[in-house]
Length: 343
Image (cartoon, rainbow, N blue to C red):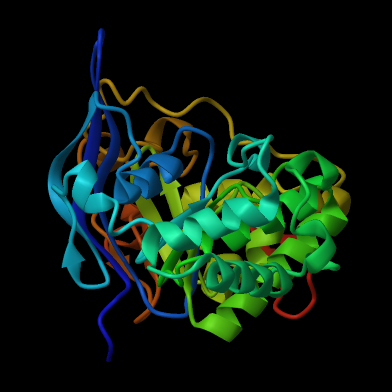
């Protein structure tokens, strides 16, 4: 089996603040393989973006890796300097952010911005870079690329701008792409087209994609595997089918129960009660215990390990301990039906 494109081992990332140390990422183990789409899901503040930006070394100076390691394409980049990372970003890994307007320069034509990304990493002539930029615009589905090549970003719609940002991210043929809420600002129709585009690009190039989203509907459309994050930790990971049809962590149950699709079936929207804990002083046990109606006494005292459900499915909940009482999930999605049912 080939080496993972991304491998994180016991990674912990913290921020120094006037109030103390904030433990934003806490002991994450994760591997992403070539050509795989892994989706990171969870509430705002659970550590998804920090996790990805730590790999890209895009976090502010008051952040630091507390322990653990991160490797991209077999290269340990944990303590790389900014100068060393310039050879990694774009070439080995790249990132697409939520708002393309904050990524694109409003005064420079789109074609020139893509050419700049190409020539930054490769020694090619302007003509070669121009031809490559045109190919990338075609790859990301920009119609009339020859005409739009010399237009500034304000001539493009939101969906087209995101396609242009994606072309820049793919300029140097990276092995790994982080897409951080890349479809959140788009309407439903355009979002679906971008998701289909990501799958098509994965098929054509073999790139691995880490897709961050709050939208479980989008995740279901694109994911090979899903990792659920809460309070800086991955609490459940498995294939898309395993997470949607056989979830085992109460937090995953809560996320699925709060879907509007379930409200349409039951006539009641079920939000997760309470708030995530402060990561200035994380609880000693399961961070979700205070919000978990199925919490056991040990949840307040000791952090649960990752229990295996299958060879590809793991969940960090004491409910999977052989000594725990059997608890049925509050909702269940029937495979192939697309319908939710209460249990």
